[in-house]
Length: 577
Image (cartoon, one colour):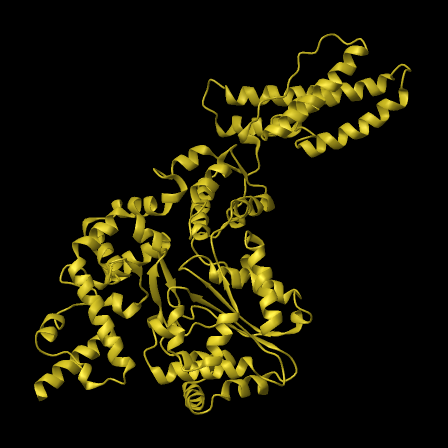
């Protein structure tokens, strides 16, 4: 069989396989597979066609007006059939147009050599021949924050990365601010830190990078754990006591561990100092120790933290003007992604593994999310859904249409509704109970995401809903990427939150539930504010509930630890008086 015959046979065998009038048995499938392997085309990309064309053109031009050798004629004829067959692999319109132009060029050369008319055009693209991309090569991360391991998938934030590096060069301190879930943590872990470790600042590849922390409800303990992550409880409590009496203590610990080089401390979710920690003394000690760490004179140290812009105003409550000044000068705000940046977020990770999109689909996705403040996580969620329904190496319009009404913009809420509708009656009741616990209304009833500890969710049991119901549905919500799990040091320390606030804004069922429970949610909000005020003021007895307010609040269910203590102390105080 000649090579020319091989190219032709490949197309014929492929057509026979697709149009076979009989069910294809395993034996027949094996036959087709081996037959196709035997005559597999030697050219399957436009780059290969272009390279072969350039080499052949050089050889052809040597002859000028002389008669072309038979050997070269055979090469040209073979190449014509190779281009024809390569069309099976070419999807992009510009590549097909260019390949057809080369095909026409060489057919014209053959006409001039006296060949009969050749009725050859580029073969139609065949998706079944495209490579099958492996599941583990996923290019998108969904709603999960990017980590350092994901830095090769992280695009669209180059300007902010460079701006943050510049701030660190000038002040050794940078605060990444922005709305919830806009991508602050991702910018730090997949953008800034990898750049620093690669030497973005002179010598930064040799700095020491401590494991990152979140303040949580006990920020001083977490500050101590930076130095010794596996330290015993006695050592940690000793450091906490030192932090409270000596604002230089954290700096001393750092200097004792690394006196010869700069260190980098990263604090994620800095707003937890105000949303989870209600001990004013502990909070003040945390700030004071950080300021002295930044100002360390013997070795330049670096602090990077993320903070939600909705909470940043509370920093003014702290009695440390130096920290407030640092913050004013060193903020980098994470804002909307530009049109070109959104395209980069989609295209660059896809290109790295050979993933392709149907024509026009990338532009449709960009239009879906352009102007959205939380475009990056929502786009990542949508892209991960599309990846899961890909056809071999391609994301198609059919997959996009499966996202439902609203396209990419409503993919998350559509996914939530689909999940909820698949649950049994008791599971739906459990799901509603959990999700309402993860929502916190404001005074204007603008709902916000609310982090809740595992124990608080476990206390949602009713005579109808068991702990096993709660555990099962909570696990399902996490697996469906509708709820995020923030691991604690021990299992009971795990915290949970709704994966993205857009779910609260756009999922009709959840909004309806909130409206139905509006008064209870607002009452709960008022109790939360009162209990936090009580804690902030050293548990002043004058702030305890009395009379009708106590009667109104004491029967509320699902209280957190602080709220329950506040109610108990109010009841005790009223009984004593």
